Structures are given as structure tokens and as C-alpha cells.
Length: 344
Ligand code: KG4
Ligand code: ZN
Image (cartoon, rainbow, N blue to C red; front, side, top):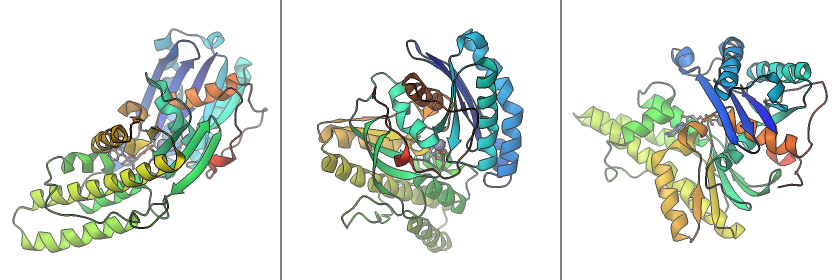
């Protein structure tokens, strides 16, 4: 079965085609970063309008790249939530309409399930059961995964998501939007020994996270140090490094706890923050010491993309799941409410 995937939940327009036998045939992402940069964050109405402009050209691009015509597509998957309602409706409206025109089934996919399953697009792919750490701009969740749709939430952030903490802290450090990758780059020239930030909520049992205190910590460190030091660039880099170390270490401590408690040897990292190099290197080491392995997608499939939606949609459509002619988008949508599929 060959599935077209459409992602428009936030500020990336993604389109891809996944083939059950041949794998990912083509995928393209258009990032709206430049559009939103002047505002320091995503402006929802601008995001929706830009998805309208970019979706059809991207669709033609991936169909051409894959050398396919409409008759070669057997199902359409689009992100139905969670995300920005206007942005979601653009992809859902196009996806549902194309499926109707082409006479194929359509399915609204959960964005975080897309992220969660994305590492399965790689070779080798992780096998169920595993623990997944979902770290994006809107979510930080630890999930025990028994199969497609068999999800048990083990813990989540009680305040800012990890990506949100990266973005807000980057802003404090004077870095351009989107802050996560810029902060990670600055941290590379930072001295890890100069500051030690707290590892929030690691000294008590449980698998929840709290990252909002770290940005206040950054603010205070910056204020105190910039007044006292000449080399402000180095101070910024050192603070970025301390922040990154604190987030990575906190995620690592909770992941180790989660895989031990779940009794599994496979950890999956997904979502935008899983593109972070320090996070990947540290999780590799930790899982090797646990006698297991960490899996994550290539960086382009960590951040939002259509390939993960085509893949997640394929798993469900191939199992016979699909929707009627109506479509809906859900800005909020708990992942544990998704149905399990039998073939998982
Ligand atoms: O999954 P994603 O593309 O969008 C959401 O579903 O939210 O994640 C975006 C988030 C942003 O907060 C971004 O700053 C963060 O992922 N991010 C990173 C890195 N690359 C992206 N954070 C830390 N280090 C990175 N290399
Ligand atoms: Zn995402």
C-alpha cells in the first residue's frame, strides 16, 4: 500500500509518500522559519496562510520525485492534531478532499504518534516493546509502547516542554528564533565545567519533568555574570552549555529510570529536540551501559515532516482503519486514546 502523508500542524509544511514494501519514496519539507523570525515565534494566522501557499507545490514535487501519478496512491494520511487549529485544517481539508477525489481512504493522524513511530523509518528499526521519549516544542513525554496504538504515559512535563525551554532560554541569551538549534550550536564552544545548573525533579521518584525553572536560572546567571565579566560571548556560550547539560542530564536520568521500570532494553527518541547531538551521544552511552540501545530518526525526520505522518498513516490504513467523509482537527488530543491496531 502507498500512502500520501501531509503535515501542517505548526510551522513546517511536509508532504511525503510511503510505500509498505519499498519504504519512503519521497519527502519534502518547507520550513516557515523566515516568515516567523521577525516576530520571535510562530504567528498562527501567518502559518495557516503559508501552508495554503506551499502545500500543492510540495505535493507536485514529491509526486514527480517518486515518479507517481494519482492512480498510484492508495490512501491519504494528514495530521489531525494536536497543533494550531487553522494550520491543521489546511492539511486536513486538502488531505480529505484529495482522498475523496482519488477514491481512496483517508485518515487523520496524531502528530505525536507520527514522531513516536518515525525511528521505524530507519534501518535498523526499533522493535516493540520500547520506551519512547518524545521531546518537541509542545511536548515532553515518556511513553511505554507495546505496539501501534498501545501507549501508556509514564511521565510528562508539568510546565514547559523541553523544546520550549530551549527556545525561551535561547531568547534570553539573545539568540534568533528558533532557539533550540542555535543554543545547541553556541553550547559547543561553552566550557562545561564553569557552571552547574540544577537537574529538576530528579531527586524524587517519578517520571515527570519540569523545565521552566531552568530559564529563570539562566536569566539570573546571565545578569550576575555579564555585569562582572569582560568576555560576554564566552559567558553566553558557557551558560548555554550549562543549560544544555542540565536538560540532557535530566532527560537521561528519567529515561534510565523508565527503561528499568518498564523492563525493556530499547529506548526511542523522537521529536525536534531529539536532533540534539549531545542528547543523542549521551543516550547512546547510557543505553549501551544498560545493555540495550537507543534509536532515533535522522535529524531531518526528528523535526516536523510529512514522512512520519505517511508512515504512521500507513500502519493504520493498512490495518483497515480509515475515516468517513467528514474530517476534523483536534488542537488537543491525548495519545493514549488512540485505538490499537492488530498487526502491531
Ligand atoms: O517536533 P518539532 O519540530 O515541532 C513540534 O512538534 O513542536 O520540535 C521543534 C522543537 C523546537 O523547540 C526546537 O527548538 C527544538 O525542537 N529543536 C532543538 C534542536 N533542533 C530542534 N532543540 C535542541 N537542540 C536541537 N538541535
Ligand atoms: Zn512535532
